[in-house]
Image (cartoon, rainbow, N blue to C red; front, side, top):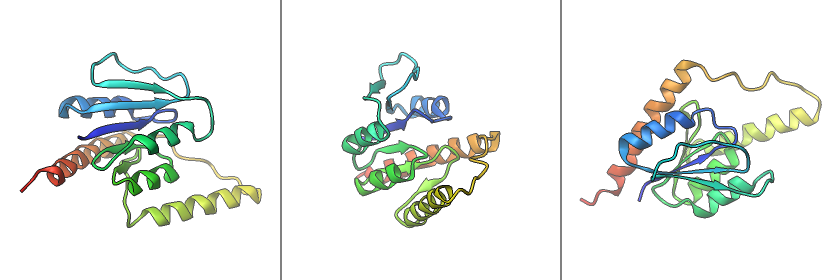
Length: 153
């Protein structure tokens, strides 16, 4: 079964993900420890977790399975999802794969180290319309790829 998990607390593309899920008839699990609104729909489930830095990530990693897709910008969560056989997609349409997750984790660690040393960055750029468009295209393509992989020959 293909389910869509959304790491919702800082997800700027929830509405786009809901539209793709509706088009493909997917169930959506929205996981948050905050105040996130979701449409009332039989295939959309809101999961509230205790407040904590990794509570939503832990819940998703414990429940996501092979063939599911996680929408997250959290690189360690993406890595955990990949280890469970799931797919992971960032809000800009960046696919996390076994081939690129190591580099993404290393970049995250380097950024954290630089912040500890006092280097300040500008932070992530706001999501542009082209990012939203890329996300929609990649999520749609990812759904098709998962379904092809699940179809028996």
